[in-house]
Picture 1 (cartoon, rainbow, N blue to C red):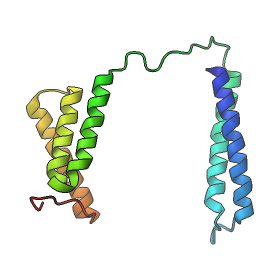
Picture 2 (cartoon, rainbow, N blue to C red):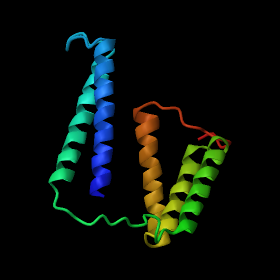
Picture 3 (cartoon, rainbow, N blue to C red):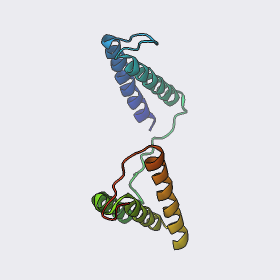
Picture 4 (cartoon, rainbow, N blue to C red):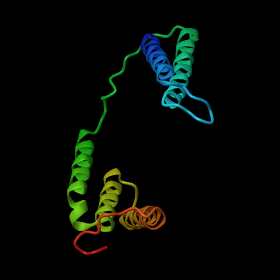
Amino acid sequence: MKRLDQLSSVFWLAISIIVCTESIRAGFGTLKDPGPGFLPFISGVTLSLFAIVLLTTSILRKREEDKINNPLKGVNWSKILLCLAILFAYSIFLPWVGYLITTFVLMLLLFILIKRSKLLIEIMIALVTVLASYIVFYKWLNTQLPRGIFGF
């Protein structure tokens, strides 16, 4: 992994240098009147700092054997596919059924899928989650949420 860290940090350092150079060409501006290159320049500098930190830590780290583990070993593919199917169904039923009911069913199915605890607790957590998100997005932020066939 040490070698991969060094290669990726050099890559991101090169990208950050390109971003900083192009943002200076676009016009940096001032702090009171920032130009179009101000934010990309700050992002490029931040990216370069992270790349330098990764490069120095990977160089100074004691030599370790590069162990490349299979990141997909032990993955429960049936749960992943079921979760994707649930999310796909959510996106289809959301405009028709409405936000409150569809999101409640989504949260309940996801909680059941990860096997948190008893069904009553999962229902309560799903209900609290849906009501909290409804209050935040619909009431406080005035976001339009799909009403569905029931009108709520």
